[in-house]
Image (cartoon, rainbow, N blue to C red):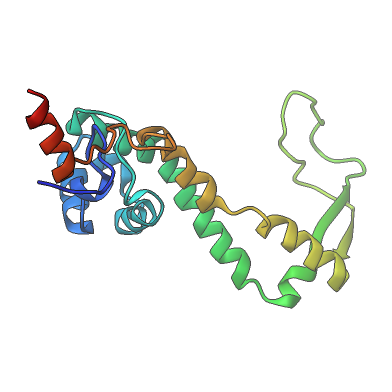
Length: 191
């Protein structure tokens, strides 16, 4: 095929997987599938496609490269999925729930029927007195705390982990060579 597009020594991501069904089929056939049940494979495919779709893969062996992709998913995918879930829950917290602070309970047991021990974390069954302290955050403190928790983009961190699966260079590996009719004539005349 004559093409003036840059040529690479390996295929592009989209040459291996051009739709999520092929990606999910390959993942399901791999030994990683059983461990990645909570990871949304379709979403991972589209995130990879958006970031690395036209990038050449790092391996000449496509099967090895697929396993490299799936191993990154195995290593970081479950944590990423959990962090996404937590972020979703944090975004859904109502203002009043944000303001609820911690609660401290202080019990006093005078003359209990059992001896206290320092070898266990068990509490005494008997108490004479109980005091509680309930904290309530100001709206400003609640929002600052929420913003601190939402500040990190967990997806960017996850997708960046796949960078090692793709070649990183500025120019194509194979130089472009153009032959014009004049060049062909000069070569013929010179012989």
